[in-house]
Amino acid sequence: MKSHKDLKVWQNSIELVSEVYAITKNFPKDELFGLVSQIRRAAISIPSNIAEGSARNHKNEFIQFLYISLGSCSELETQLIISMNLGFIKEHTLNELLEKIKSIRNMLIGLIKSVKSNNKTSH
Image (cartoon, helix red, strand yellow):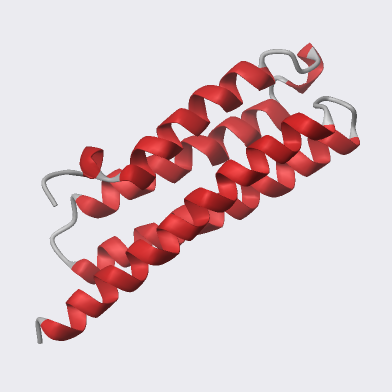
């Protein structure tokens, strides 16, 4: 791997951040420091932790950061469901975002398995 930017999961999660920002722009202004802030932080955390983990010297650290990204996927998913329940986003928008999160989650799980298996063979 040359860099985190070469990872499809990082690229997809960067796209997700842009979509989340566009969608949360339409949330009520009184949610700017509440739900909007939480959603944006969770979304940003996904590619940020992939990038930080890939810059570490040890595969175990990379794996730990990938698990943090996985946690951020679940956090974002939860916050988006709450947003739909509050009427801030439509169900079809939620479903599109959940599909993207699911895809990113599956890619992260695959990457974790790959890094773990490479870790075992290097000992």
